[in-house]
Every structure is written in C-alpha cells, then in structure tokens.
Amino acid sequence: MDEWVIWIILAVVLGVAELFTVTASLGVLGVAALLTALTAAVGLPVPVQLVVFAVASAAGLLVVRPIAMRHIKQPQLQRFGVEALVGKSGYVVSEVTGRDGRVRIGGEEWSARAYDESLVIPTGATVDIIEIEGATALVYPRE
Image 1 (cartoon, one colour):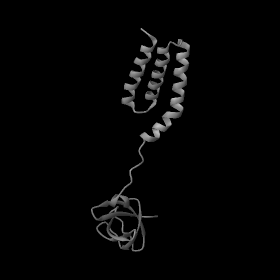
Image 2 (spheres, one colour):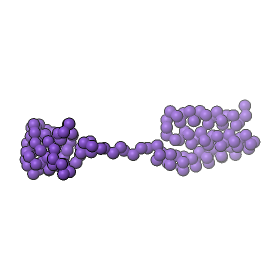
Image 3 (cartoon, helix red, strand yellow):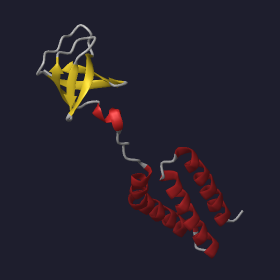
Image 4 (tube, one colour):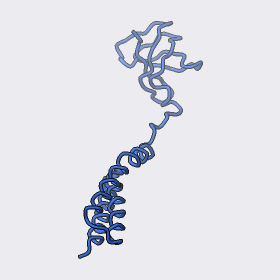
C-alpha cells in the first residue's frame, strides 16, 4: 500500500473523529494528514513526510485552533424582559412581607413578596430581586 493512501485514511479517520468531539484539534490534525498525503503522492521520502506532518500539525494547533475555538464558543445569551430583573436591586415602597408589598425596580413599581416568607422588610430598605413570579418580584433584603 502506498504511503499517501495511509495518510488519506488517517485524515478521514481524524475528520470523522472531529465530528464527534467538535474541539477543532482532530480536524487540524486531519488537514495536516491531507497535506502529508500530498507530499507522499509527489514522492518525497518518509522523513520529509513526517516533518511536513509535524510542522502542519503544530502550525494548525497553535494558529488555527485558537481562532476556530473563538468562533465555536458562543457568548452568553443576554436576558430580556422580566428575566433581566433577576439580580438587580430595588427600593421598598410599601412594607414587604411573605404575602405582599411594593418595590421600585429601575423606575417601575412592582408588587413584591419576601423570598423568605418569615421576613418583614420595612419601607425604604434596599432589596435584591431573587426571582420573578408572574408580576410579583420575590425579594431579599440587602445587608
């Protein structure tokens, strides 16, 4: 069997393995194997083929892979609507208990309940929004 066929088989195996891992590492090695297959098809000796494979692999892993990984990783999705309120702070407008109350969040007044039902949060306190249930903010006093 010719050397270039072996390199082609290696490239295909690495390419298929890349489909399952999605790390870009095996794909880069597969491309290096394809380049090495070309050098073998031209008739260059095995030591030169190994050097081509090593250089192409190193170049791909050091240069191409970081760029590919930047494109693969998606930025964290931004929260919209009421989900964006979770984690923000608010100001208690009317005393908040485990059953009812009112808070001001970013200029809007919301109905509120204490996240810990045993708490009573006085008017004027600063609270953190822990969760939103329907149109009610579940809040916890900021310490």
